[in-house]
Amino acid sequence: MTMRPLLLAALCCAATPALADRIFVSNEKGNSITVLDGETLERIADFPAGQRPRGITASPDGRTIYVCASDDNLVRVFDAETFEEKPSLPSGPDPELFVLHPSGNPLYIANEDDNIVTVVDVNTRKVLAEVPVGVEPEGMGVSPDGRIVVNTSETTNMAHLIDTETFQIVGNVLVDSRPRFAQYDNDGSHLYVTAEIGGTVSVIDTARQEIVHTIRFEVPGVLPEALQPVGLRVTPDNARVFVALGPANRVAVVDGATWEVLDYLLVGQRVWQLAFSPDHRFLYTTNGNSNDVSVIDVAAEKVVKSVQVGQQPWGVVAVP
Image 1 (cartoon, helix red, strand yellow):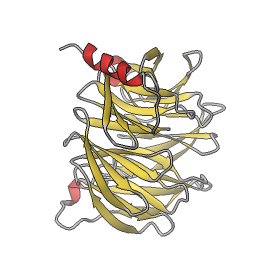
Image 2 (cartoon, rainbow, N blue to C red; image 1 turned 120 degrees about the horizontal axis):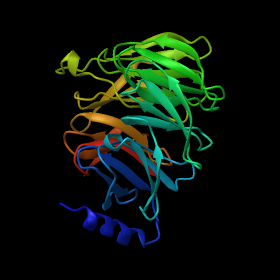
Image 3 (cartoon, rainbow, N blue to C red; image 1 turned 45 degrees about the vertical axis):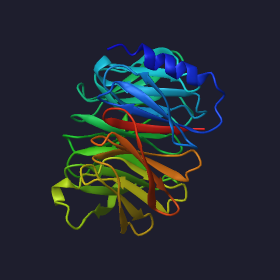
């Protein structure tokens, strides 16, 4: 089945000037990107994104979309306005998640099969470094000041802190079982690491490089083994932390000061990753088994809409 009609539809949509935010969703099994209008939440385009697209992010100016095409062993690059594909970036084998330096360059990519983090210059498309880390690296995070990149290794159960100037590991923190995602708060004082099998979120004091709190979850009627933290996002004021709980089909709302769990929001099936709208009014979730995106009103802390996307949505990013 050819993907050409989807691409043509995307290009036709792109001919109209963008008037609203756009939400890009990577569909792992559909091998495509779905684009939603941020105002109407209508599905405005689908375009091919290589084999098994998972991690997705955008340049700081919102003009470029980067996608981990895991089975192509590439990072595919797209124009956010026209959806046209640009020259791809080398990634190392099986890229799953990545993070951009706050300046927009370079890109830090977790290579699960080779136990390395590949550092790529997005302008020259050259590999700058390959940093050996633990077994099965996946999660990637970067400090707000851009000085430290974090990688989480699923089998070693560690968060590795990498200096972005020297590409050397400057710290290791043992966390709970199968860490999947790393996210700093917005002043860089704490680092959150989700653990899928451990069922927890480790809160790490970045100055001391020590765990100072462990967030645990309990949902009535949901088996403990279904509480699998994966994606995580922090509001700009650090007041709230939202955690995707995988097959529990919930997003946990956590107080950013006390780390108390305040609520659980029911979303679609197997909620995986999260992304804020550019103005941080909404939070979008990818629900891999129900093939939809849930829209959470951040201020109200409630789900306001569900939108169907492609097959097995994995990652999401929104740009102005």
